Amino acid sequence: MGDLLLIRHGQASFGAADYDRLSPVGEQQSLSLGAWLAAHEAPPAHVVRGALRRHAQTAEHCLRAAGLDAPVEVVSALDELDHVELLARHRPDLDGHEALAAELRAAADPHRAFQQMFVAAVDRWTAGAHDHEYLRPWPQFRRGVLEALTALAARARDSEGDTWVVTSGGPIAVIAAHLFGTPPERSFALSWPLANTGLSRVRVNGSGPQMVTYNAWPHLAGDTALLTYR
Image 1: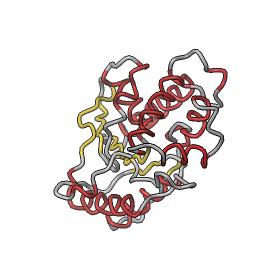
Image 2: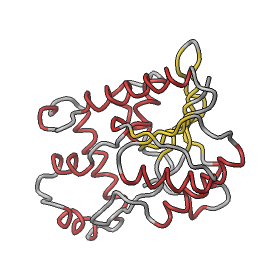
Image 3: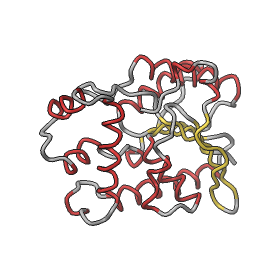
Image 4: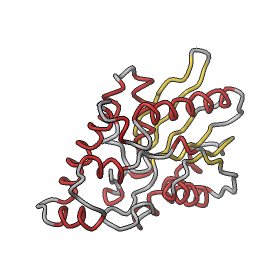
């Protein structure tokens, strides 16, 4: 019987036209994670990731630093929500990346301005009044994540080792809210403090999956430059 070790991806490229790739900090976070896992954890029975590039790069750097050449299974239900679509639905006046970037550059604190805008966009998405406007509405997103959790947990019960799951803050928050009994509409309150390459451990036993560790970052301890949240 093995645990599910949920890994949030390393820092992506905030402010770039192509957000979906690791920044240099994200690469180093992933390498540090791999080295820490090699020193403190047994090799995994399975490695799973979402289909995004930042998931692939995080898994690649982590496994390389851990000295592992393991196959990696892609599970698209572990992808992050589409922040581009959510922002476009929330702020249709911002037509494309350049318009958004210009607004953020004009803000006194671009990161804070983006976070406030993104929280509002997520709130609109999860409220339920606009489901028909989204390619992947909130109920579908949540259902897909929880179905993936059920499938991974079932396999983990028969595994001799843990399953490393590289994904994003959204799916991790959905899983945590489900296991903590948090109302679904409050799921994303659990995602905002998630650290890049943070670890959340789900124990699988006869009573069902249980969250035993949430958002730990021992591999980043002592290096504040590597502790990021976006």
